[in-house]
Length: 236
Image (cartoon, rainbow, N blue to C red; front, side):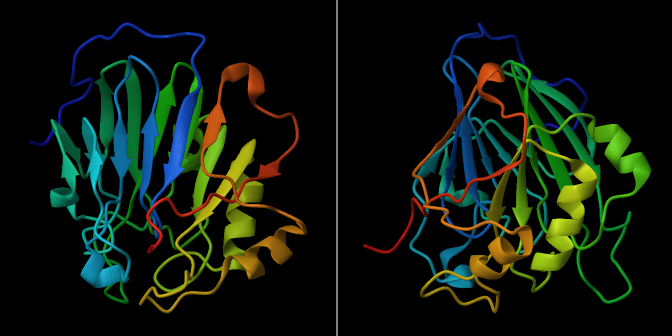
């Protein structure tokens, strides 16, 4: 079920006045959807590796940034037609997807697996899922991405960006909206820092989590906003 060729997929009728919606399911897993366009799940996790309940999601496309149980559990998603795991350019159901490696072309010297960053373009609203990014992107990588409206950024350290490094990456990417991910949640097993440290690093106070982030081209803010999402797969 993999789509590895450029511009894979078929055309779709675009709903130009509809908002694209981003929902977070804990760790690095998000669901992106917009009416009449492809639904994408990024980095579905194995519950045994993360410590969260099993995912029960449906999507047309799954993207995997890192070949590790916390990011590559495709079986958690129903209805999948394409699985994207490597660099390339794709068009699937009206969504343009650009994927590039960020942690080197192969495995790094410390044995960490390579990472693939995915940029999703929903009718002109671009969302970058940074995956398990570990370093500041190169100038070539930034130019390949172009404008990033929403950045889904790991902030809890471990095998990905720390709070301080995440802030540095954000200053380079210059997104309009930042959504933190890959940080400690109650009951989770990976040893990660809480989101609080990142918010302090960004100088942000009084942020209340919201269930879903809805974005249209007209709603993109002029100044940087940090949006914390509720975990839609929190234990009951």
